Image (cartoon, rainbow, N blue to C red):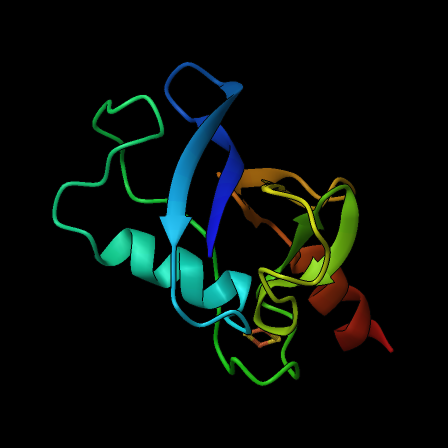
Length: 123
Ligand code: FES
């Protein structure tokens, strides 16, 4: 199974966002987005779909068991957990990954969720 992961990247130095696509293939049709991101970042020479060198994709994960919310992101424009979304959840060949919209972007798919924790402390 082959999918294209189209990732909204954030260039901190230029303070701008841009889309970058990565081709990802796997034999495991039930693999999650989280596993795909880990495998892409594990590559020694990560290249994008056009063959250009790419920096590792910045994203967060912790439990990988749908408990902590660290891997929350927009998957095809819908908030979802990367560790709970499978590559074959729908028939799309291109899967768009973007940071959650309601929080400041730190890097790529990482957002600053400290406002949540601050509000929880107040409660
Ligand atoms: S890594 Fe904890 S919910 Fe996905």
